[in-house]
Length: 311
Ligand code: SF4
Image 1 (tube, rainbow, N blue to C red):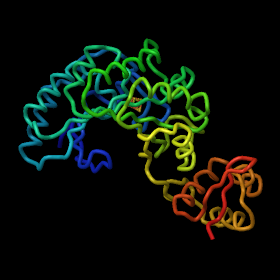
Image 2: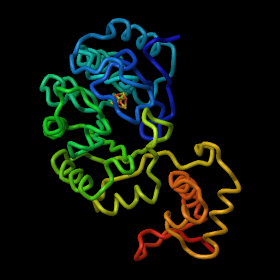
Image 3: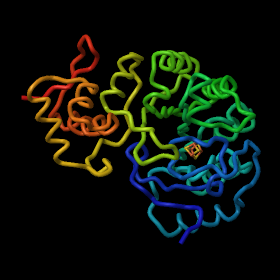
Image 4: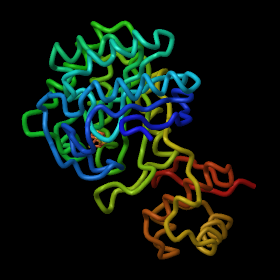
């Protein structure tokens, strides 16, 4: 039983990925509203050897000696890995003991303003940083950062890293409807992308409940609308496909009522909320599944997006 290794887990982006945790659970520079690990208990930008690297190296060596090679070794976990001051030493160790396995690092990217962090990360093969808000309002509301972080430095750090790093940068953007998906935020994101020049922009959204009530996942239709707005050719959706089992208290009768209503005439979300007295957030979830299954399609009309049944 390993303390700092997990998996390998199948990952759509990284194949069979062996995860390595470099910091204890919730040592992080952010306290994101959507964090699935829980509330950040040490909200810090101080780098130190939170977990002794010797211990992790020993576990990894044991794993590699006794198991088939994974597709990627992924530095990730339940906090921010760049906070471990021995990150660079560890990446060098991995390169030495398994030169043929690519190293991926999942980071929130907030420490990339620090040339030392950039220097250490450059030794990896794929970096997957995140950027959830390109306006100050969205950044503070979604990421709830350590007070010493500022958005401009954060974006400039990502841009500086791009100039110095020849590997792949897959920038993850977590969309929360009502928080970072309005026109002002989308324009600010696009400007940030022009500076950062990531190889790809990967849209994600809530899969499980986050730390804050009243936030919901973006639907496929909403994510696609964002892609259309940006009109860039390197954006993709990595959010998990919508599933009925993800709808809390899923009701077949509610789904049937939505389908019956749409069979009579196309409706907007507002129309369905008013007609059926089902909360708007639930209507979004049901429709997300129905659109994904091609039972319902959308069209744009004078009052916004209309949903209609596929006949
Ligand atoms: S950066 Fe990652 S680990 Fe830190 S709070 Fe945000 S989602 Fe959680």
